[in-house]
Image 1 (tube, rainbow, N blue to C red):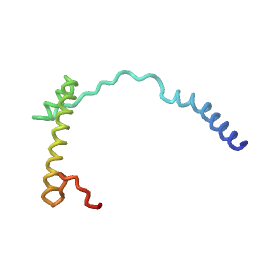
Image 2: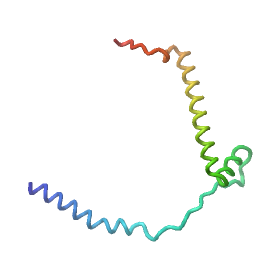
Image 3: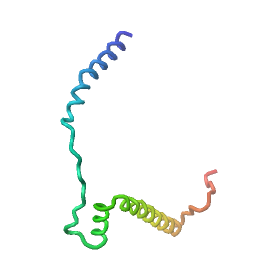
Image 4: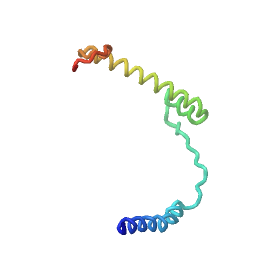
Length: 98
């Protein structure tokens, strides 16, 4: 019991000693950061999406969600087709092991 209480006391002491140091480690409050996409060397679709990111972040987020869902679905259908062509039947739920 004494060993446990010494360990707990040691951990609490370490926390109380290091907590102020961790709070001061961040330095002064940071100013607001502005994040923009560099569009100087972009053309076509990349330029469109970079400008969209700079000007209308909500529409950019909607595009990102829609494109991610579309590309994920496309990859899923392609992999399903490949698995079916290799002989793996993923459409039936039969358990062969039992």
